[in-house]
Length: 262
Ligand code: 5RP
Image (cartoon, rainbow, N blue to C red; front, side):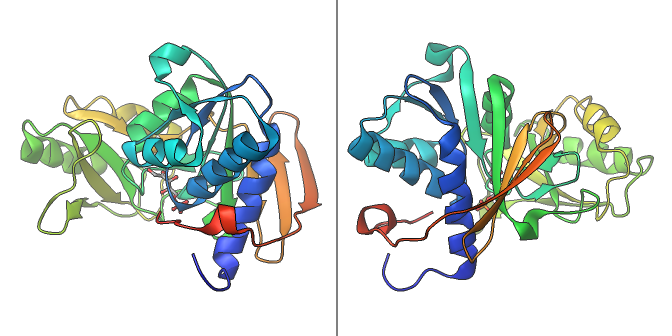
């Protein structure tokens, strides 16, 4: 990557840089997906290469697996790891209880499985991801290809009786064809505007047979690290009930910033 980073990329980078402080020698680490998580994978790669950090990484997508290997992180499967010490991932939205909407990158299923199998989930984000009420970002749900249109109709019918402000459902596309997840499924994006009761919504939507999983992460995230373009970071820990402010010195390092494609 050449030239100055944008303030938003700086915010993502400093959040990632602060979050990797949770990672210690010998840990098994869940590696999230998306542009913010990509910074985190690069930061960890740098710690492996330059500081001799010894970790095993469990990626949440083929994209992240490729990047992790490229930067020098040993990649293992979740079944090899069995349980993880910490997962660090991005988010599309987080609220005051650190409940999330994820899946903007289409990796919500593996992300949810990996985060749930971790002692701790740390989310990294810039402040634009903070919302009062979840739902402005369209909620992704992963659905199997069999009976796709029937499943979509059942989802639409279910929305009528839910505490939401919108009911438009769209099939995520990749150019002219439906988007396909790493598990060979499709994504329906639910344009709800506001989800009144995310916990109930998550339970109800998952009852529809063709729905594999939804992008609501309820009571999964333990801490959020919020980055700002000026190097400030804020760490909110929901279990400890603490908010810490910090500052990350921003030094553009060639190793870290080259070939960032995510
Ligand atoms: C991928 C995700 C991402 O974490 C989420 O979309 C945030 O991405 P970004 O950091 O690029 O804004 O859930 O499925």
